[in-house]
Image (tube, rainbow, N blue to C red; front, side):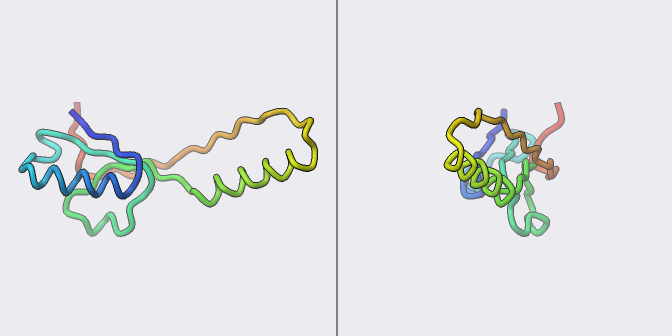
Length: 94
């Protein structure tokens, strides 16, 4: 059983709730999230996170919008951004 939180706030909130419920992480439940958490290395329970660069994504989106404004005939494009996986100690091995 695992929780996959979609942002930092939800990840930290889920960690707090699981501790309040006295659930053992990762023995009883695993937790992972998206986007890096500042000072993750200082946390006792460190969720595994898929970290991405929002600046890089925003820059590409802004560039695509400006290109479309200049030339409305431009075809849609697909951008692929690969996150880096930062392993913590909150996900059990299966």
